[in-house]
Image (tube, rainbow, N blue to C red):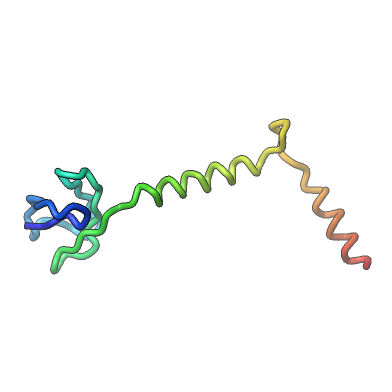
Length: 88
């Protein structure tokens, strides 16, 4: 019998049949739990906050690819600035 690390509820799973990396769900708090090791079985909660931060980072990267008109920015502008720095 396993216990949820978040709410301590019992999770009815045969410890001999789980595999490392398997995702389980707590029946009480519905937290997704990853099996991090099998002997003994250890469960780590999968944080929704981490997933949300990754999604936000991806959105920010996508937004940087376009200027305010929705066009791809010109890379030539960056080259000009670098050349000016080299002259000084």
